Image (cartoon, rainbow, N blue to C red):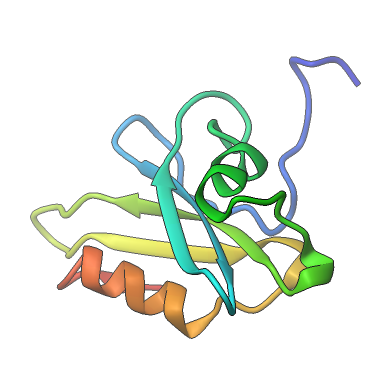
Length: 112
């Protein structure tokens, strides 16, 4: 498969386009929720490892209970509120703390 013809993971949120804001997030029991804006190809940069290693002081590791994911925010339009789509990587569950973080950051938005 060429670099110009690759597929995103199945758990990638479906929203895309120039108006869509993309964020990544990470969570663990000790350090709590962390989220940041990303840009660029694929699921964007900065990568989870580099961002969370800086925030947590260690490399992120799912074996330690760390949970990772991505979110997209489609802006409000005349006929609807902003739409926030949050998903966890590796088929995991989105932690309640992450949902709470996004609800605080995007009040009035619809969530899915």
